[in-house]
Length: 387
Ligand code: ADP
Ligand code: MG
Image (cartoon, rainbow, N blue to C red; front, side):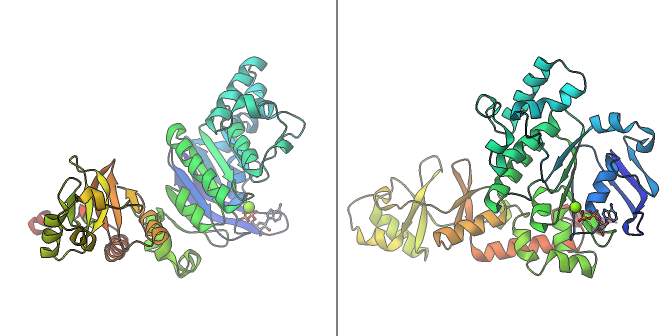
């Protein structure tokens, strides 16, 4: 969709901002450009919408050399979101959002209707916020308007330069999540610039890690974290890359342990005896449909004597995560509830539990798989033997 072929940019003062850059972004892919300040990220981005012209090399969009496309027409195909947002202060939020469709010749009413639709899409009620002026919004809301405006003309390509840089970390995470779920439906081809590795990892299908004017590694988040291509990347990714990996590695069924179980309607005393025999100090409590009700300690069951059922003594299970959630999610549940294990659910049904040991194993597994460059599951030992 977007293809850089040996693109360089030397500014008139002799600064080489981008040096012999070649890469390709697939249709519907979100690529993050990450690197320290001054490494050429913004220059790369602005060459795509021809706000800056390369000194050499060429950039293709859908196979077409963009230097042959009229810049105004080109920019209609590209939404642009920047950190300072650049909203028109004297226009309402709705008119800001409707600007591009209006400029491309839509009738005012139609452009506004489209603007309202987009505000809704980014989570701003147009009947509440549409008539406000930008200064009457919070930073996060302004940023949402910026995204709505960039999407209003439904361009296939979106350029985002530090789009969430100006808001506090909590709002930033929200905006990131919102944008990701938006992207899951609109599937734009996106280049997103950030200096924050965490953001690059969260947002990118693939990441381009910039050194000075050059890409040091262009790969999936898991591969960049798991197998940095150069010492520079390893350093940029940081010593805590194991921690960052937690947010890109999903929980899998193989990571789980099968915990001791007890049924909600089981009488307490026999349950205690059974669990003791198994050497279990606790059990998860399930209803007749296998859904998680809570947990119970063997000791509590034994103290209850002949009275009561497991259900009477069950406690609430606060630490749980859905199947497929990132390991980081499970880890933070463990910390938050000071729990030795976390229940993993498929809907309400218990699949298993994740323990710290298993968590560590899962982390190791994902690092090892990446270092070898293959997913372990994909290795067919039979076919290797045959070959
Ligand atoms: P980033 O977005 O990664 O922070 P930029 O692409 O903005 O980096 O800048 C890359 C390099 O080019 C920096 O050294 C910057 O100072 C330089 N630069 C950017 N714009 C100009 C310009 N108009 N004239 C001269 N040098 C520039
Ligand atoms: Mg920049």
